[in-house]
Length: 82
Image (tube, rainbow, N blue to C red; front, side, top):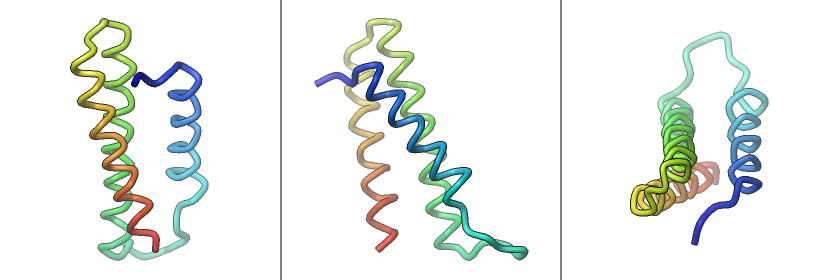
């Protein structure tokens, strides 16, 4: 299954919200659990960009691999919220 351009745009908006609007308010360094969650968002950005690039190049294997990695990272991110 491939991601459509609309789905990719929706995922970018979701990541943008999580990175910029849903950040913890703190004047001190973030605790390790928050740092780990923020790292997961960065990994998700990388994989989403790779999905877009693979689609443009027509590399279906790379697209499939990065989609699996993206969904894995996102599930870990939302799993750590609980």
